[in-house]
Image: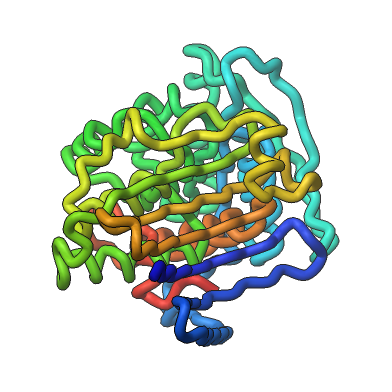
Length: 344
């Protein structure tokens, strides 16, 4: 007799209406049962008399890349104003683009400055002028650039006292955290900005802490599909795998054992909709017992970038509230943002 348990988390955000579901299905040859539940909760940060989100200016770095652009649009959608300048790749010519959010019919012009040595000097000079205009605490950054730029950009933000949300994955994460902590920087650093996925990660971390080795002897397999322009292994997958390894004691190697899909044919075969090929994150984690009679499967499938973009905008508002508290700098995670009730 073979039994299977399927834990499914799906979020489809590329369509006009987004849907999410969380269900547990267990079956064997003698019985079949299923339960599903969904809930929607709107969470708001506690207000601070000295904190006015409409006064913020957010420098979204990495445009015209699609994730950075989506984050900029989400900022507009949530009532935030964009900085009139931002960093772009060193090989991209300086230009001015218009960021437009079709939900709120709002737009902003942003001058993109290449991240060359001269460009960084120009950014520093522009930051000084912007801070003089709107106030030191009201300027923050969002980073959706490239894995190769993560560590250098983090140091740049910290050295220039610029609070930032690091949405870019990759780079040397241990060094990044160490550099930020030694500089007492204000930052939100996380591999995933989606509210529901962050909640799932928090639940898995708690499960692994309370019941280590509960799945001892089970074999872990992981497949993740992303658009072919994604340069690195999914940071979300690595975070989830860390918890599953504690639960299973499996010797899974994150550098060798993750099956990464980065071509259209493989992604389509994995279940990715054709219209989501240019922006998706489909993950499946499977735990199988030694004799093959029991299998658990965890999925989270996301089409589009909206769920990440809106979580990023919430994170930058959360970070601004922490800056205005007047305490020392600290590195926060998206779980901190979720626990604070700051994900709308």
